[in-house]
Length: 418
Ligand SMILES: Cc1cc2nc3c(=O)[nH]c(=O)nc-3n(C[C@H](O)[C@H](O)[C@H](O)COP(=O)(O)OP(=O)(O)OC[C@H]3O[C@@H](n4cnc5c(N)ncnc54)[C@H](O)[C@@H]3O)c2cc1C
Image 1: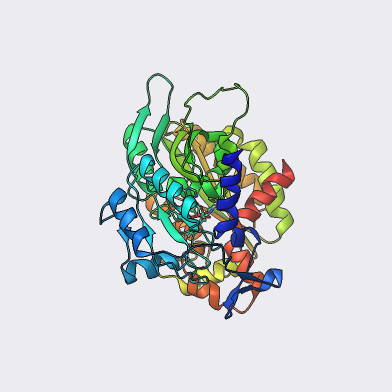
Image 2: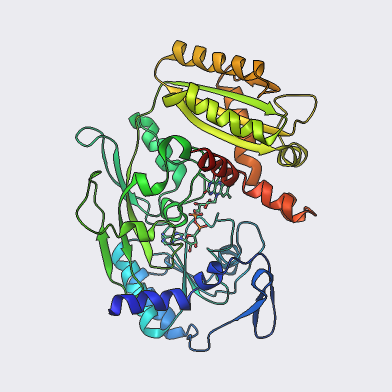
């Protein structure tokens, strides 16, 4: 019972409360913060304590000097979200090195009524990782060890600490002949704990499914410091309740994820990528259905962007070239196939494209001829969110939404047709 009360307290006493109300924009008033989308002012709960010198001393005894960050520059970065839209005023960033330290921090904060906000790579696009007021920021970025990788007995199970940067996991697995089932544009900064906490979808969702499928286990620390060990590595585990699912996508509201066990697929040798143009949205939807029918098991990605997104990317981001010049089409689709038979896979994709052009679904298209061209196609998709300033400065909120959530639209299309 105490566990739930504690978790509830973390929820109410942390910035998760604000992130849960789907705010679009905020401004500070004397009393609190006003979130336009919900037409309400969020006040700092006066029951919260403020950081005292004794608190700082206590944290230094458990974390050492290095783990207690009060430097203005570092705090400024940690207080500001990736889009530069939301800003907290935390005076303290804590960097634990292991689960025990996370547990001690939370236990203490709970007893002192200090609000906390978990932060990973701070790449989430909705302000969930930054404080609303002066919450203590807890970042597990120093917990970045790969604990085990089993490529022999239970093929492809990786167990690692939550602070591992996604890109480092991708590189590690690449050397082992495996891939992460998750990949996204923020991979150079985001942490696997943050990915799990946001239930990030990313570029490989179509093929490998969501993290609810590939995460096999978790370790998490609740608000009162209790460590929940759910770090199983068994894929077919049907032994009762599967509590880890509560943490996947819970954005830090239930506790801090400290370790992750994830199923990783083997790397396949033959990858082909096509960049296509469609003139209407219905054609994009039909194309996905056709791709699923004709490319079947080798279809690994189907990504969608519209003309507004493409124009913004071309205009504002260096090094991005229009793959289908000279004009801008209404919609673009990036298709990737991944298989193990180079000749068969390529012929299959070519036949599919020919058929799609002949049937009028595709207006124009190009197949990547080498790895550089393939990377440049993916680059377009990945950098859509890379430049917050052009997104923020755009005049059209609808456009913003479209630019930001293209991957969700892709998924929407996918689900609609499934
Ligand atoms: C360029 C770019 C591309 C992106 N592409 C995609 C995409 O294709 N698909 C997609 O779904 N998302 C995408 N995103 C958003 C995506 O959710 C995040 O990039 C990523 O998953 C967040 O990880 P993070 O470590 O940065 O977490 P943060 O941003 O630091 O935190 C996100 C949330 O998780 C919580 N949190 C973080 N770490 C922990 C932890 N250890 N325990 C408990 N709670 C924690 C935070 O409190 C916060 O609520 C993209 C973002 C960018 C900037």
